[in-house]
Amino acid sequence: MSECDKPEIVERGTKEKEHEEGEDSGFLGKVKGFIEDIGEKIEETIGFGKPTADVSAIHIPKINLERADIIVDVLVTNPNPIPIPLIDINYLIESDGRKLISGLIPDAGTIHAHGSETVQIPLCLIYDDIKNTYADIQPGSVVPYKVKVDLIVDVPVFGRLTLPLEKNGEIPIPYKPDVDIEKIKFEKFSFEETVATLHLKLENKNDFDLGLNALDYEVWLCDVSIGCAELAKTENIKKNGITYLDIPITFRPKDCGSALWDMIRGKGTGYSMKGNIDVDTPFGGMKLPLDKESGTTKLKKEDDDDDDDEE
Image 1 (cartoon, helix red, strand yellow):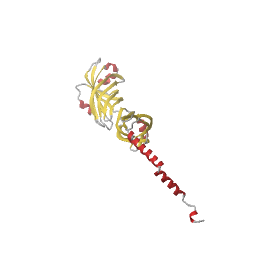
Image 2 (cartoon, helix red, strand yellow):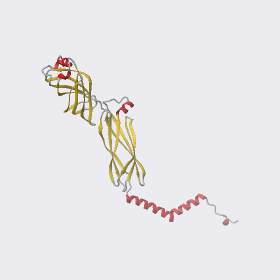
Image 3 (cartoon, helix red, strand yellow):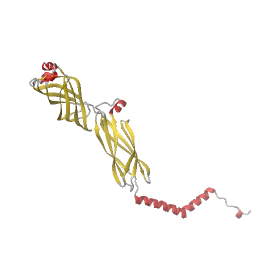
Image 4 (cartoon, one colour):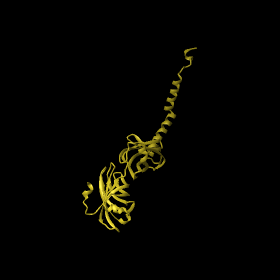
């Protein structure tokens, strides 16, 4: 067989490569490039883009001795010409790396096309759960926290995206103030009606100031209710500080029975007091209970020297 009659031996990979190169440079290659170019132009024309999100604010609409309700405002901006679904919201609140609460909010809504919307994420901290888990977190303290939120959205072209967010802050673990009636001072005394002033001592056991706005109360002397009232009173009680209030009250001593003679003789008189105080705090308004059982106080005439009580 002559040399010219020998079959040409070509590697398979070389043939395939040449075939692909032929396609790329030929008709199919031009069609493929045209389709890709059209896709990019459609994407540019329609204007698909990734949404953005930011924690715009954190509110504490309700706080008391049992719980704190927290609302996290997240501003989400959708640059796309169609609405995008907010599939899930994962959230976590931690303090010094320790989890306080976590959870998932499914099917959280839809973000309108070419718009921005504030998505509100409601959270709730139960103080007993926190104190039972972490013994070093004490009532009256202020603890740092970090809110972590993952917004999961579904965007055409990009697919499913996760938008991670973080925000730091502080949250109080409130404690009720300690109340004590140091003395009851008579302004006008009779068995039928006595006008007196309660000298009230309030101790703030929290690591934050309390701005007193009002209080309501009921007082018992010798297990007999001598009156209740609401009083508007403005006073600032410093953190871990003490303040004194004078509260007017009118009662009938004869209703106290035989204990009346102990009052008149200046002996210690048993009392109880219950009520609430409305206060402003750096974290919002609170209504804190006043509760004193089995206290002892003294009754004084108007002209008695106050220094006698401090011996």
